[in-house]
Length: 158
Image 1 (spheres, rainbow, N blue to C red):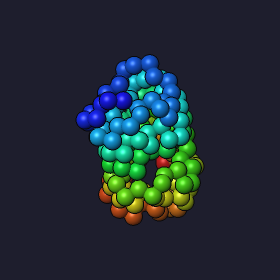
Image 2: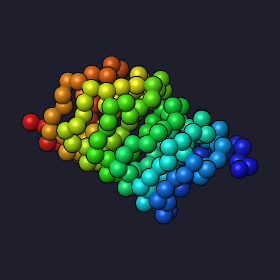
Image 3: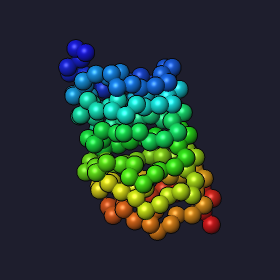
Image 4: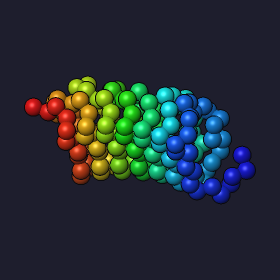
């Protein structure tokens, strides 16, 4: 509550399973947070709403099955090594700041559709390697007009 100047928070290698709406309180100055290697299964809607300055969020090696509501201030989001299987249409709010998104080593299958990446207006790097994707429909990535690096290695693309 009184961490007015906190810039970086590393809670990796703990036993967190859920992030609730009051877990982090108001951390406006927080720039980076690492929640990797926990047992995270659920991020309650709005749980990160008051981390309005957050730029880097790393949540690798958890048990997340779906993408949660993320702060629109993020520049870099790493959700590698989770259990995410789909990216539903309208998952992302309109984001003018997200540059890199790592969804590698998840369980994403052939359900990329038009709108899966809608709202990611400035996306430059997208990592989807080591998933279970066998085809990429044109509509599935059509929203990524600013993409520069797209990683798809070690999928089942034919």
